[in-house]
Amino acid sequence: MGKKKNRLPFDSRGGIVAIQRRLITSRAYLNLSAQAKALIALLHIHWRNDIPVGYGIREAAEKIPCARKTAMDAFQQLQRSGFIVMVDESLFISRTNSKARTWRLTWLPFNGRPPSNDWEKTNNSTGADMAPVEESEVQI
Image (tube, rainbow, N blue to C red; front, side):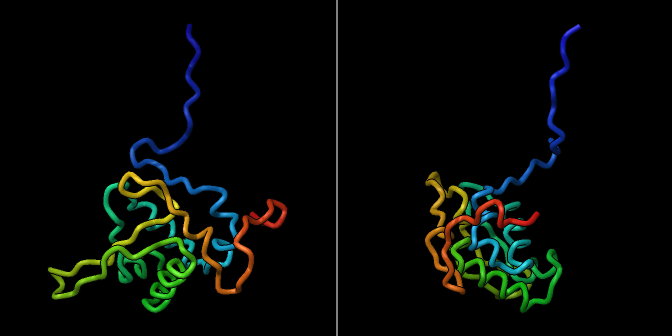
């Protein structure tokens, strides 16, 4: 009898979302609110290399869940910290013709180009060093 292959327990139907350890241990990430951290994961789920992520405040507020203003603040935090860059502004004509803002996720490739990793280059609101946090500083 042959040996059984060791299969990893990942969900083969829906895929997985993997975020770089370098990103989640950075000061830029650790200084984000809990809602902004949740929004990173929600945006990542919709990422594709060839099109920007279309995701709006209403959808974020519903999925996180949080107040509309809190969702707006989460988007602003991610923009200021360099995790996302707006590609197209939202368009609201009526409920049937509305279009959410579209975003480029800077830690992932886009249109065949490598990630820009703007979050590494941007100073956070406290002005602290953006270098990765030592493992001993991270509490899991």
